[in-house]
Image (tube, rainbow, N blue to C red; front, side, top):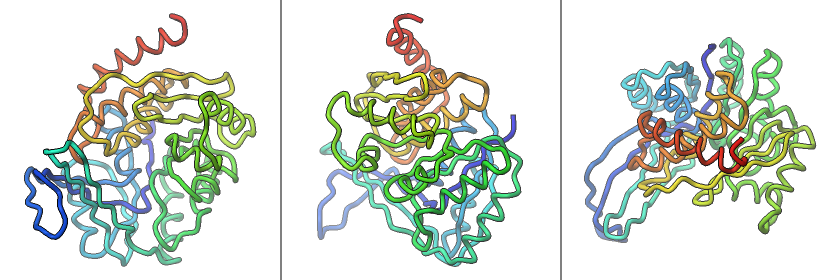
Length: 316
């Protein structure tokens, strides 16, 4: 299997900690601090590697914090190629308030990308030999909303399938260009794409219309505590959420994308890969802070998700 290549245009150093109470003005004393390499594509690469797949993370990083991100990836032995930029790589912070069980997430907008840096990114993406390219995460300042569409066209030109996980104008513009093999929005992101709140039953119809347009082949929409739905040329397939006690929502969507892409890349059917995605996304919420899906949790939950899928399809 060729490595699954991931692209992270706006990576982050993810800090996570706990505090008794988060309140204004006063110093908030934290404990159990940890730092992880983050950002959509980097998270996908981390989970692909955790689940036994081969990956290559391509990302933009620079400034005083760029080397810190590289050191965190080195510690986790994630194969990578960095596209140097002048701006500082952002640092995000997640604080779990133990008194309330609430999680507070502080996410900076990140650096502005210069035109020559964007061009170097596209040139770097042209080199790896891959069958799957995952573009995941927000667009940094300086890149127009169509940048992912350019990345997707470049991937298809060399025979790679393009996976997209983003939101807002970037999602809209990339889907308008077509050619996306797998897209994984959340329910909120999909409703923003459609332009309105969807009533029960409407989500599958709107998703089926998008698939029928030919702009995307597989559409996996995560529904939070309600599970997820897969829509492809064969129709819609909905799975309920697996019953677990969530500790953090950080990285759940990225873990879903990683496992589903890995499943497709290793020959699973769309539904089998979707089940893998649900298991990995659920596994991610079991870990605190910026930790992601762990293999032992994934394997246990994959058994449960497979049973749920069999029940949902009438035992087929």
